[in-house]
Length: 133
Image (cartoon, rainbow, N blue to C red; front, side, top):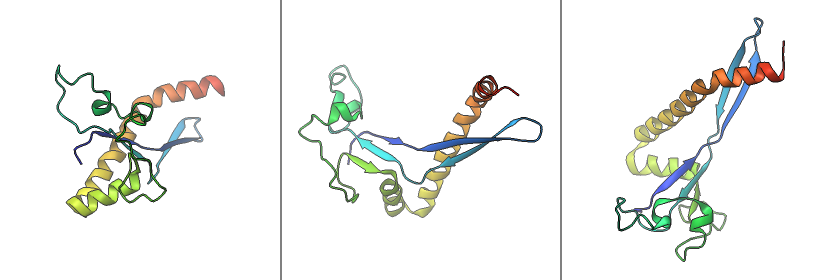
């Protein structure tokens, strides 16, 4: 549709303490999330369009004031300025094929895991501080 968008992924971080006292992470990526779209067709940033917030920022607070903003009616049929991740993944599968949908989902899972692996030492330190052995 030519609109810039972002994906909001819901990723549950849980952990268990193993017999050695080490924190063992468990991660759960939800199959649904949110896709937020800008309300102005995207054009590569330039000095002439940097002030067009509704082209470059997906924030609801900014785009809801646009005359182009479309409120969802409850059915997630690919209409509206906010859509579900489930719809987006179905769209990718229908448009580019199931193999591409699976590849995208695998990359999203990998991104989440890598993000949490980077944060794991900090999470473990916080856990140890809050719940000393």
